[in-house]
Length: 294
Image (cartoon, rainbow, N blue to C red; front, top):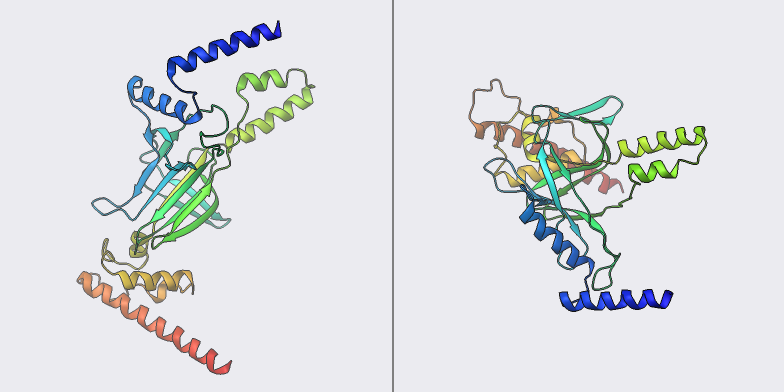
């Protein structure tokens, strides 16, 4: 009986391979689903690849989720804008909570699994990829969504000046509601309550969150400068980044402190540039002093 079933399965497999013309791999199933989603769905999934930019500005970077194959293909996600008028809270510490305004986009991704390896024999995995252009910078924050309006941060990084960051995504599969119900059916009531509570915790922290903060607009607001005033100030922006990140200089020492706000943009930028020059001179003097004492 076993040999008969194996013979029938082998014969049907050979017929299917002859009809299609090849043995299907995971790459082929991905192409199949992408092709038919574009034809059958009213709003087809889009590639998870987003340019980081201000309105009417050149992009400063790119964020995408790609596979590890040679083509570096982006995943296809359903997306829609949610909570357009609300803010997202980003707790940094017990006493510090940021409120971020901007576009909030919800993405849904249906991953197709057909075997565990590609045609070349490499195992599939996916990476969050972030790239910055030269003389550009942004902050990338990743974490999990703790409710509809709170992002619980796990890690963050400043990406600048042609940096490229590849973050492997550790994907865990959770049982479906039916599989979970069948699995706990034979457990004691106490074990069932524990399993349900633990699954509830897993589901609440299963939404992956990505937050992008553009640095240059925040610098302008922090230093009391008009919007877009640092667009062409490359050296000044690099010096400010160095003072804030490496030396952690207070912003009060660098911000505009003119007698009135009714002055030209160039004058405000020159005021900040003078402050930066003064602080840099103090730092250089301290460096020389340490070298002499060494």
